[in-house]
Length: 150
Image 1: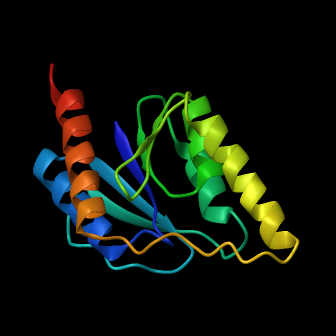
Image 2 (image 1 turned 135 degrees about the vertical axis):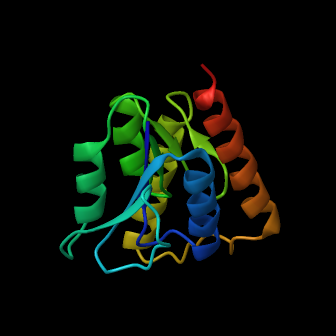
Image 3 (image 1 turned 180 degrees about the vertical axis):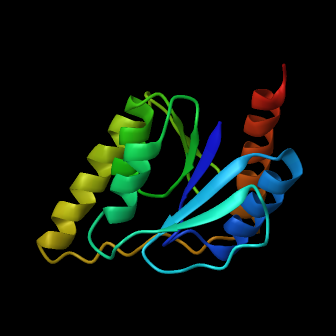
C-alpha cells in the first residue's frame, strides 16, 4: 500500500499527522504538488513536484494510484477516480469517500459550481478545526491499523 497526498491544498496539520503515521508504520507516502514542499527526512516520505496547471497533480495521482492505495484529497473528482480504480480516498476532515457517497458529493459539487458560475456567492468550506483534525487522525489510524494486520 502507498499513501498519496494531493498536497497543494492539504492543510499543514494534516500533513504532519501523515508524516508521523508514515514514519511510525513504515509506509511509503508521496506528496504530489506543483510547488516544492518541505518534508521531513525519511526513507518513507517523498515529494513529487509536477508542472503547474489545472488538475496536473490530480491527474498524476490518478495515473499512479494502485488498488488498495490511500489517497488523501478534498478534490471530489479525484476521489471519484481513485475509488473507480480500487483505491481509497480520505478527505482532510476525516471522511472517507465511498462508492455509496461519491455520486452525491459529485452532484452537490456540480450544483454549487453552477450556482457560482451564475454569480451566486456560495462561500467556502469552514476552516479546519480540532474536531476535524482528530477525526482525520482517528480514521487514518483505524484504516492503517486494519491494513497492517496479517
